[in-house]
Length: 269
Image (cartoon, helix red, strand yellow):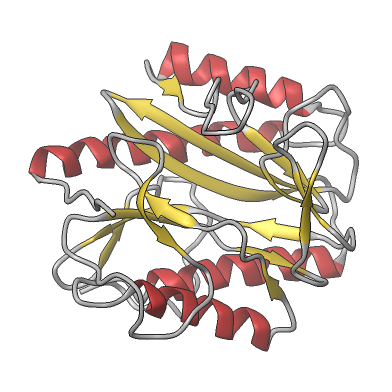
């Protein structure tokens, strides 16, 4: 396993890419409403990324081993879709929840973030799931500092999520990120404290828990990308790109209109 440590130049580049990812999600927010198709969101995202930000979409044509190239610029995962949903021409309807996952490449650096959006008025259960998944991500983020362990992050997320009656998807995880879309290490959203790799200042990772209302089991659809809950219960995900600092963390994918940080979050030292 090779974990990259970013120097000052790399950290500066990651800050820019992370901010652009957050600003792209800000831009898309007003368009997520009943009647809009996810293909339209994809077109808007691609235009904004290339024409306004002067950047590139990392998901477009991304083809890790064994996969066909991903055909769109963003991932849009709706209701029981866990991740990697492919935009299409089906209109969003009132009550849907949708995760929009974006990764922007700017000057070779990657900024990766996702948010949950509610289409019109969502159910009480859907609202609760989205809020608790957001809180779970921050529970993990708060464990980040040089000298901590990846297992500390996963444990914090798992204990919180399962304590709320939610299940943690285990087949997909966060990851290192930098000049490459996916780098070492893998960042699991479950585990035991004090285990796995030790965090070092200059590492950049994503923390992106996927939590289900029902059981944690998932399956892949025939398109080779879209992942859904086996029991078709709702799933939610949030994602930030995070820099490990000597004394804590810096969230790189924040912007002026990012959702408020939960009140329980203690500022990084």
